[in-house]
Length: 364
Image (cartoon, rainbow, N blue to C red):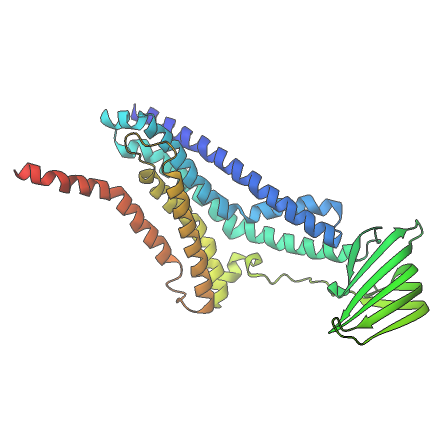
């Protein structure tokens, strides 16, 4: 009978975890889509790149979602079973807690193993691929034809070009160009223009026809106005980044071989995510225990607060290791130890309080 109850509880927890993960993934997907579309519109990414960047971004954030999803899933599922007195009845019938909760702990261990593979191997590769793809998309977008009615950045953001109308042959009409050269700002307005690219792709240019320029320092009364028939405005194309140097995109083997505190901090963070998954699973089982007449969602807010404190401590510890405030040998183990002590207090505090409460009566 205990095995049947254990499988029943495991099914309830797994179902609740899947629902919570689905909701969190929808929220993350909405944020990812908005961020990628905004960046794609600003840099004119190719259409096929957007979906791939969204997918790679979701892989990068799985390390955050799985621990909190598992914590909330366990608290919600066991909270319902406590609220409906199912677990109280099972425990009153003599079923051992290890039989009931063994499957839940096993689920946490399995998810932690999968999350370790994601954070140590899959996520760094996805981050490197996303950065490489984004750099290539930005460079490809720099050579895309100008679109009418949109602002376009050139020269690494030092200039902005706008055209009201674009003919099929590429001729621009009613063109606006704004350039920043230190404190000086120059604005060019032309009736028409042509957009050209050098053969080697290192330089772009806007050839303005029949217009005028206004140049000066914003806020200063001194400025100059020039009228011209033709004005050639070159833009230097920023060099492409062929090597990804971001720490979160470095392979785990490279982090293991480096004594650099920042690299060791990144390695500690990758190891902390699966450990967090196991620790939160152990903490969630006693945390979800409800008192009589408590609502089934009474412990959800406490679980959310614990996860926020836990994740913020891990992030702060990572920063401290990178800056040398905490020794690399100590790492983030102190954070997990503190939460484990909290879990032990949650597990054994009710028993200790009960024994202390009834000891005077037994003595009398």
